[in-house]
Length: 170
Length: 300
Image (cartoon, rainbow over all chains, first blue to last red; front, top):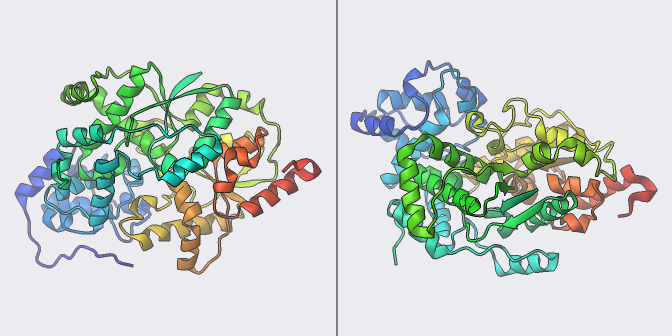
């Protein structure tokens, strides 16, 4: 299993990055965390991800280790942690904020960039292959609704997504 | 009953049987679908991971396209469902987002969204709009004796404060929709766990470790099949089952059936009319189980 947990060697606190993350959190509040661990006990990958530990690290300003880690990209986004948190910390949403900050700093995993580029190119996560269209015809299904990929790309440019993901604009 | 039908990305690119079963079942039940054209991707957790606002804008555009048709939205993918509901909530509670997204939509499609569209997953249309009583009246072939492991999928339930779809710790909609066919929705320990799909591209082994755990749990509870309502969960349990078996060294051999396929068979549709032949795992075994339940009159 290729899991890399966060190393606490060379601890570096970064108050500026911590402030940026706290400012970007749209739901929940990490400062309310009492470290009860209900989030981690309900997490299907709690033996690796440990949401309560991530929230603690955000509160301490240990964010650089977090945003450069693989760990934050392993969350399945099942939201069980946020659902069960008695303090309304919303750890799943904090993880999204960490991923967003990591993305801006260029830490998006290659695999995710590839999927994002599919959307930029085709307007869909997965392109509809010719074989799949043929299958639709055979099943008596109407053609899949067309998508104006150029329009989607324009929207992604407008909202700043292309710049983050590093897509080349024609 | 008429809805704008948004099928998202995964269904038309990987799971035509989901689309087929939905269209044929809803036709039988008197629901009209109007295909939402030019919609593209909702953004889902993929773009939200990179930039949350991008996801909200992409999803609001889908809502605006449905509003333009004066119709509520029917989706078949919980990933889209969660994403669209999140956008709807943000649109209503955040004035600056409202203005920003409408500026973009105006420029892009000449649209302005006013916030009126209701987002429903297939199970909400069946359970709330049609109702169990109506559906019960359409059942032609009882599935009594079939042991079903219901798998909701994360994004139809959570985050419940935004989705308000069902009880996130003890949901009932899918269980009741299964039991309306007289099949038994069984207890299984990992029922509410994630299938592993969202991290498949990031860490294949870790993703499949969750899939293995779920499949084992369903098998331990002697399920005849797993029933799902999410295209990504279907791909994970069905298409990835062989690979999951190789990793764990255990054969599961559990058929994975989309809910509209199960309902379709029960209201009298033929297996090919719900695209059962396009599912991968244990379909022959599943048809044998149905033949046993239906006896001489099985008509398969």
